[in-house]
Length: 352
Image 1 (tube, one colour):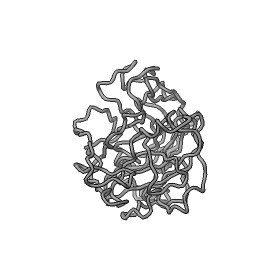
Image 2 (cartoon, one colour):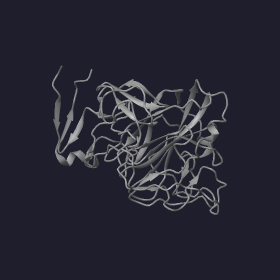
Image 3 (tube, one colour):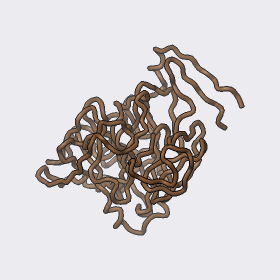
Image 4 (cartoon, one colour):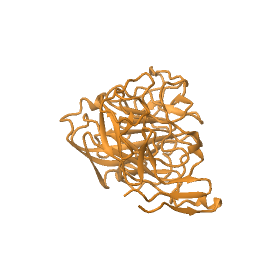
């Protein structure tokens, strides 16, 4: 086993870490349309997917098998303090403003990272229909201009449902900071991690990774959804979240000062702190330990089985997978084996 190599860089060079982009672009699933790294136009003219309809569709196909753990990763460097993201799908192969996007996974806070981009894992639900779909990643940034980011990708689902009735019960994808149709515009408040109304109740999953404070996506306003027919007079029932949340975030505030000099694209969530079970949840093993239980009671909770395996809670069972090279499972989260500290970049090459 070789000793870890240490590369010392002047502090001034750390800001020149090799990212070709500012802002963020979805790297996996691999998007179509060669999107740039800018947000959606505030007018909504390039909604959905940051491209015009005639450009939609052509591009790589990402293969998803039902029950598999897929990776959400990014290229870019400016994470704007994090924020909140959603992963949603539509059966329309060439999405338009009228397309219905249904949420399968939400990340409340800490997305696409804090200080540097992270990689997240999510399970492909069995309610997705077999065949070709389009998946969308959306992001509402915590710091900076009030923006909405969106990239889309082609996916081919295998082992899925024969029809779409369960898919249609999933929550609608949230919209904010763009004008898509009269009555659908709302604006996020800067400096918060955002919660999404109506998620986590119909077989979609939610991970709360941010440190907060948390606020509903548009404060006291009703956030819009993908449906352009929503009007400002519609009655939207939005659950209220307290900042004294019972969720375990596992977040380390020092992460905000860390800038990574490498980009991780692994099959496991990297520094995503995916444990999001409430303190009232019960597990077959104590949350925060590395006991590696096989049963659980909160969808989306994450566990370690030693350093080489991680598991995500799904329907009371834990799905175990090996971590990717260069990462390890520690205290119920996936962390990089290389890290940046002060003026040094440490690269651990001991994992084979």
